[in-house]
Length: 197
Image 1 (cartoon, rainbow, N blue to C red):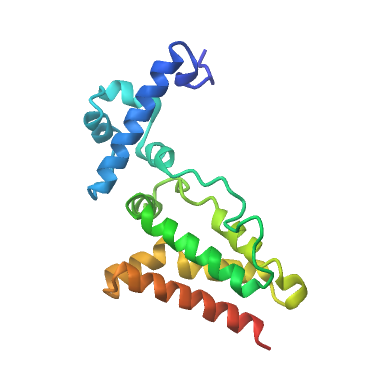
Image 2: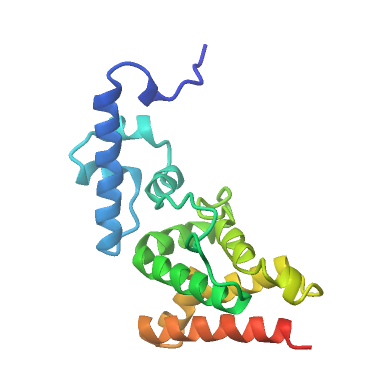
C-alpha cells in the first residue's frame, strides 16, 4: 500500500528538513548563475545523492515550485494606503516590479517551464498578482463604478509581470531600470484609459 504522507513527515524530520532546504538552496544558487536547475543538478550542487533528492522532488517542476519565493500576502499596500486608486496602483506596481526583478532568474525558469506544451500547469500560475491589483483598485467601486476592476487588474498584470520584463530586456534591449519605468508607464496608461470617460 502506498502512503500519502510526504517523505519528509516520517522519521528524522529535522534532518529531512535540512536536506530539503539544502536542495532548494542549491537550486537558488544555480538560478543566480543563470542555470535552470534539474533535480540532479541541484542534488549534485548540494552534495546529496540523486536518489535522495528524488525522494523530495519527483521532477523539475516540483523543485522550481519549492524554490519560488513565498509571498502569502493578500495585499502589497501598507496598513494605511492612499485613498485614491491611481496612487494605490502605482505603489503596487512598483512593489510587484521590484519583486519581479529581485526574483528574475527564478521567474524566468518558471516561465520556461510554462512554455513546455507537454508539461503540467506551471508552478508560477497562482494568480496572486491579480489579487494585489484588485486590492489596489478597490476605490474604483466609488470613483468609477462602471469600470470592470478584474479586467483592469488582469490588463495591468499583463503589462507588469515577468513576461513583460523578459520582452523589454531581451527583445527591446532596455536596461532593467528602463524596463521598470516602461512597465509603470504602461500600468498608468491602462488605468487612465479605463477611467477616463
